[in-house]
Length: 106
Image 1: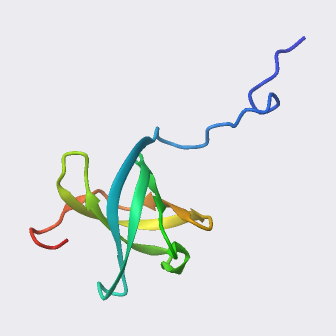
Image 2 (image 1 turned 45 degrees about the vertical axis):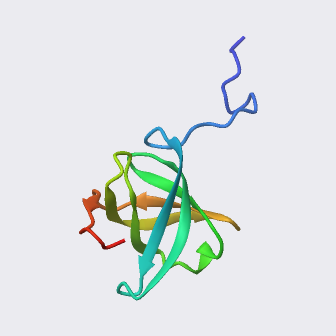
């Protein structure tokens, strides 16, 4: 008899391409050619994306710039794309490597 696999045992199957790390960092979601932004909380982050929490994130366009401090505390920015959304959070995929923000840009 074959042992049950994780899916049939009722366990969630991991679909992420990279392991995620929990964090609580404030971020800015910048769009509309830099004229509009929302503040969000980064709840977890991986090499390929992040989960953002906040009010009215459903109003964000499908692609925008995410500005936040990286693990070393350096203010960075990168283009992201929304890949899923819920009432109070969204998942984004990183479209480019992070780049440092000029001082005073945040």
